[in-house]
Structure formats: structure tokens, C-alpha cells
Length: 120
Length: 114
Image (cartoon, rainbow over all chains, first blue to last red; front, side, top):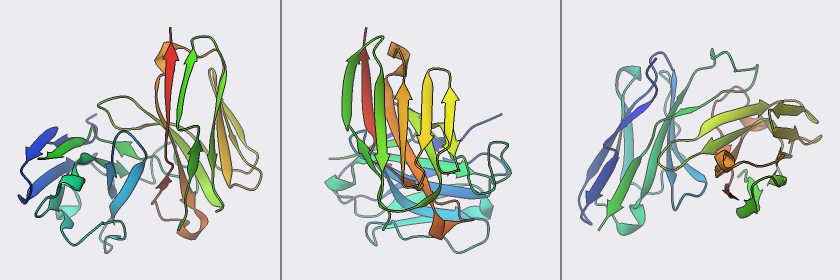
């Protein structure tokens, strides 16, 4: 079956412009996450959607960052007035507690290939 | 705030050697996962450990969850070039039990030299 897809794969933008990054999660997965990864290091949590609950926005670095998830499926991460420090790989993941590997309190996150954002 | 520190940050060894990567925290986690990420791709789950003291083996990879569920290790025996990648640990906090949010570690970049 199809995995998590993200578009575009690469985005180069000028400082001050707005960008939109898209994530298509695995069909049926109720949870969706956005992370940021700089210089191939660890993942920085940005935002988490779970079903119809209010999203956990605790990781968004500033009010220039926002995300939506329409119809419980596709999500868009928007960065307004981009800055050079926004340059990174933005990863999306989805998960479902009904996955076979999930135990009583563990969930596998399936990641997309990421969008590499470069702000010049 | 729960933090997961991984060590070493970078590791480069010869093919055939053994190695251990560590994931440490001052917080207790209800479960801990290990992911491997290759260039241009997203992380892929290797294993999930749930019980304190649990040991899981995946071919040449051995994963251990600390008794207190605050730390974990990944040991690779007879490393191969295909093991090269970024290894990430990720914990599900006790405070987040039932919530799918994970805290990711700082990562260990492993390079196996032929």
C-alpha cells in the first residue's frame, strides 16, 4: 500500500516569502505529526494532530508557523515570512494505534521522505 | 521537558567491528523506539521496547531497555556497510501514556568503513 507522501521534495524560496508544505498520510491513520530536522540531526517536534481533537501545537517555534489538517487526512504546514534559519528538512509522519506492531502503549510512526526547504 | 541524549553523536568504524550506541534520559518512558534513517528518506522503525530490562534482537542488532526505563542501548555485532545511517531513539513519556506523541533523541550518525 501507499506510504506517507510529501510534496514538494525540495523547495527553494527567498527570505520573506511564504511556503506551504503538504503531507498525505497513510489512509486510515488517525494521527499525523510534523517534525523539523536540521543538518541530519535529531527530530524537532512541531505539531501533532489526533483525530478530531485540538492539535498539539507546543513545538511550533513561532507564530510564523501554522498547520492544518483537512478532513482528518491531508495536512499542510505553512511558514510565513520565511527566514534563513527555517532552512531544514521537514518530515511528516502518521500512525495508528491499530497497527500490528503497536502494543498497549506504543505506536509506530511511518515517515514520509521529507521536504528539504532552503531559504536564500 | 523530556530530553533524550544519544551518544556518541558520530561513530565511524571498520566493517566487522562491534559497536554500542546509547540513549539516555532523566525521565521515565513507557516505551522506547529505535529508528534508522538513510539519506533522503524518513526514519524507519527498527524496534519497540516496552518493559524495563527488556532485550530484543533483530539479526545482528541487540536492543536493551534499562531497568528503570530511562535509558536504552543498541549494540551491533560485526557491523556491515549496510548498517550505515542515522540512528534515532524515541520515547513515549509516561505523562503522555495513551498519547502517541514521541520525544526523539539527538541521533547517532554511524558510518561503517569497508
